[in-house]
Image (cartoon, rainbow, N blue to C red; front, side):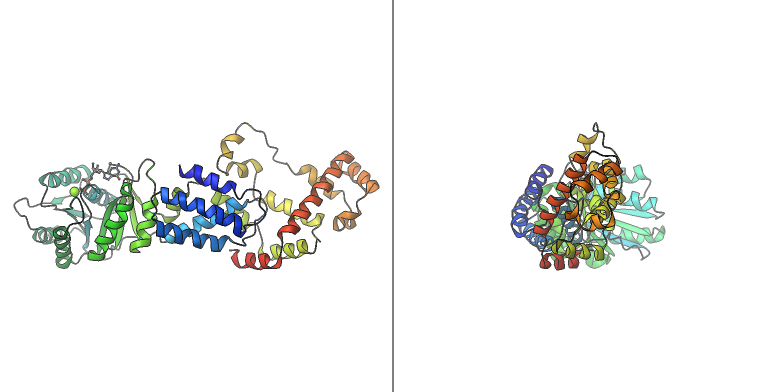
Length: 436
Ligand code: GDP
Ligand code: MG
């Protein structure tokens, strides 16, 4: 599945200090494949990965955050933006507000009509449903049963075969009964059909709806995108409803539809029951598509703790090989500020379960801190000066063996070497630009 694929994709990046052209290109190829598998169309997937690549290149990796995690954050932000960024609410200012429902047969129009009425009723509205499917007598019954179930009146006229007339009658009835929202269910077809389009366009012309919601089955993948385009070309609808997103249906259609018709997705259906309706949150859908657990919040927390200026200073020091034990100590404090080590590790997908039975000392850095604290100011600023006699004194002062001190100094030197390799002015400048 997608999760596995992304996990595999991110392996390529693991252990790299910063995101480079080579590792990002390789990873983006994998991610494009994964997106295609999640029903995102090719053009959207390509545009998306190109943009993520552009943003990710040169991004520097913060303490405690791997390139894969940082990239996931970039992707999540980008996906969220692609799906509209913010929640788009229904426009319910008019009284009565007229809402027209359109879509193919079986998409879930009638079910959604009931769900929407139920939702609006819970928000204090007084809705009326209009049974506008003149082709399937069962559709009228279906709406009436739903109306009864949720306690919302339904206007029907089975003697008429004229959807425009029924819609207008329904609106007149709603005005008389002082309903402030009137939702018109309509007839679909098995596939895009001129007669159907003409009918719905005529209902639109005559009722001047404030909202036209296009309902589409998320499980239909690429077809959903084509259908959305055809309906939008003709109706210029105001929003999309994605149904059947329950279970493990992938959300790829959400991304493709939004990018092809550029209309907001307003609701998602997550089951057959009247309560199974959710407002569409772009960010949640992005996480669903990525399926990457809580990595995003981990990265956000790390970034919050990481001051821009400090980062620039640090870069300068690393480049000049002036990164010293004071900086190292500060880094440890940064990591500690982010929270409990075990919690942090648990946020990484796949690690959470593993960590269940592992005891991690919350104070994993205690020893390292003690050793650094036992150094003099001169020693911290000049790590190269710490020879045998100084090591012995530091060991005693911090309650450690000399081997522990030597090990830490060795690790520190190795780290410095790696850091220097990955630092260059261009990267630092780009990082400054890309830090939120
Ligand atoms: P219409 O032809 O567009 O009016 O579609 P219906 O509202 O009659 O729905 C067709 C079928 O899809 C029915 O069996 C519904 O119960 C089912 N359905 C509608 N929305 C959802 C949903 O969000 N999830 C699931 N699992 N089924 C749904
Ligand atoms: Mg129907």
